[in-house]
Length: 341
Ligand code: ATP
Image 1 (cartoon, rainbow, N blue to C red):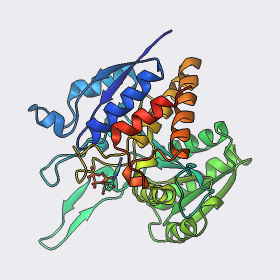
Image 2 (cartoon, helix red, strand yellow; image 1 turned 90 degrees about the horizontal axis):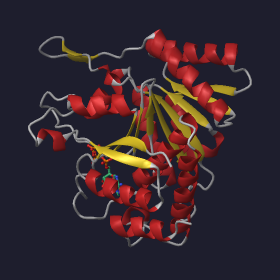
Image 3 (cartoon, helix red, strand yellow; image 1 turned 90 degrees about the vertical axis):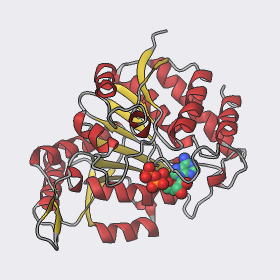
């Protein structure tokens, strides 16, 4: 059986706890991976290095796939966010967050099954901020035709591969006529010229958010620019049980980084209570990526076994505290491992 070298970044806060639990689950499932451990975030700073050391970047460029725990960036000390740097340096332009109800995790809605595709490199995350006068500061929202068309293509291609029927773009092009206007026109053109078979909808983001919380089942795939994607991802996480159950992936031409949507959760770090499920689910996305892009059927089969095991664990009430259960991080990982078939 071939194994794939995967860069593993444990991260900060609850990161090391949830990555250790995820490693245990993948090892027990016989996942065809070999970890290449690298540092980023506070863990790297503590060793006197950059928040995102060059050798971590080089390792991801070399091996092309990484599983990453949440990294903390010190606030207001001149550090650029590890996540923003990673996405920019590796040009990981498409972020994907599948949001679906899990049996055993009751929430207000029971039929949520949507995918968020977020543009990951531009918008207000361009980091162009200026002091204009003594009184005024400014943050620049950037949109390029290249990136807008690229993410639109990516979303429609992804929807086609995953047999999704409808793409909805949330925007504020009525106010930000140039930036959001470009994003919207790009998506509309790709739809009209290349994917007329997929249903296409445009909604002003405020109305879209209202519809999301009224009836999320009306959405299939959401295509959003950077900041809207960030905010709406957490909103959607709330629809299905919170940040502990939403995985994520960042794809680019030169690699893919898989990570949970949640942050380093300093309030519960070191207590052994964090839910490792979002990272386990991200690892399942990673195995599916190995199956699809590197044609490794064993990785795909392994992903299915882990998914079936955590679904069964949840159905049987094996849950961490954030989901109303009694288990700690390691106990939940063990419950998943016991149910691997
Ligand atoms: P960061 O600055 O790194 O984004 P944060 O605390 O602002 O961290 P999150 O880490 O996303 O944001 O956490 C938000 C809330 O959700 C916290 O109260 C945290 O305890 C909870 N939370 C996040 N992830 C998990 C998890 N995996 N298991 C349980 N609770 C979680």
